[in-house]
Length: 205
Image (cartoon, helix red, strand yellow):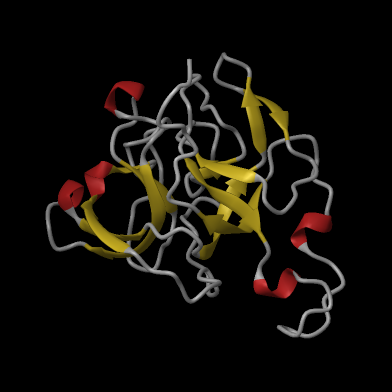
């Protein structure tokens, strides 16, 4: 399931807002060989991963990358230059796979895991090799190499996850009511996206 970027029906859980930009595929990560594993899934129409745009090193501006969700892909050019439409609007809600990794051990392996995720918990674009081929998000602010991950958004309610809501009828439970195993779990959540990298522009002396 998580070997492919998220593309299930219902990936889009809000109608907006929309701020769509166009970028080349080779500026998007973690995608294909532009990732820690080098074997991420390929972008294609019908798949909607949350990705970062720009450099993967702090020298190139990481983690203050633009982030957003892939809307569509035009594959008419040479593959690294395929054109990708990305919605970068704050407040857009989408469903995507998230790994419950909180920290890494400094040796390239996950160290701690979230066992009780809550709405509003930050999620980050993570290019670590520990994530499955179709997973681009984790709950860790740093990747396996200790580099800061760009903030992508926050865990949020899907429309059917509001208790006793009208949408979908009465719902007594939500994704967030479960307890996860104290190990790597990669599953789909709704994400409230943000275009704010989470970094302060200035340091106060």
